[in-house]
Image 1 (cartoon, helix red, strand yellow):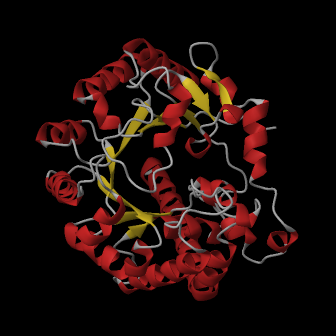
Image 2: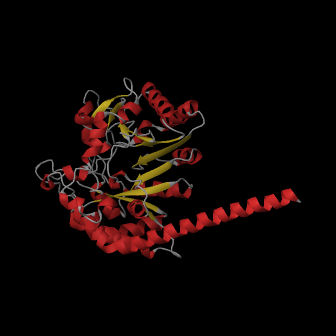
Image 3: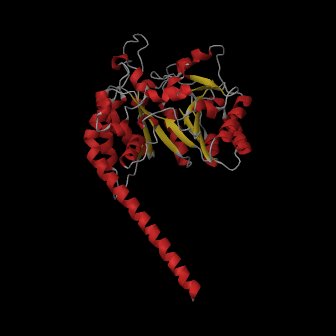
Length: 400
């Protein structure tokens, strides 16, 4: 087994705590794992152990993803301490930071900090007001769109590297064109769309009513593709859609950067507020707890037998997947989508969605891939020719 490098970690500094109570949220219930405290916050000792370990055990480049719950509940001073500790233990490494936030607590001081230290911010915004406020409400039932959209615009206006994450549900999937155009008008040129599937809490034998159906997801992918293609200028995309970017990698022989499209998963770990480590943030469960950073090394837990077992679950696919011509482009999708709806009994929920999409976009993806490969070969040949010419000219100068 090849040892996996420690390239990134996903950190939950405030655990499952959040100032929203989104209907479809899967992480709020994780508070049950830490019921001894009502408020969950990473202390400075745990933070320092975390950063020191990551920077000691990683390669020349590493990234930290700060997520929740809602990570901004930690306050800005916590993240200033993050920078201080990264500078203390960085030892010349290239360190990246990403913040995934619902945007409610952001202000200009936050924006200035994020801009100064080149943080990448993902802001959760499901689209126009009537779509966003359908499921993304405060614990008291109040809407959140007005504040979130205003703060998203503030980040963009201040030049903070910001992308938008939208959850696709039974409701929002019917309005994908409006969502895409709304995000573009707001100023986003990088978008991520996450299909939502959760088990019904009242009837655990079925998916929750807000879950995205395979048929709707297939339709969304096809419509999004057409919108994305229509925005190309001189053959170059003007908008980045994460799923399409990842799929494109598989058409030029490069592994997809998105773990959902890789053959195996388990390439990163999740670190909870108290230092507990889990295989994946969708599997923060005692079964997939790998240990605690105060007792074990992160790199060892990443390469543990349990993490390897977790990663291999993804490759356990039915025969129809193994003989499917599109297998290398999806590898069955995300493991969590197979277990949230008991009706699918561990099988890829979005299999038909992907088939719909590839039937729609496969030919174009192939052509785009061929063009890209040809362009890379041409660039390589030009670089080699310039190098050869430079060497020859230098030789002529030398013998004069």
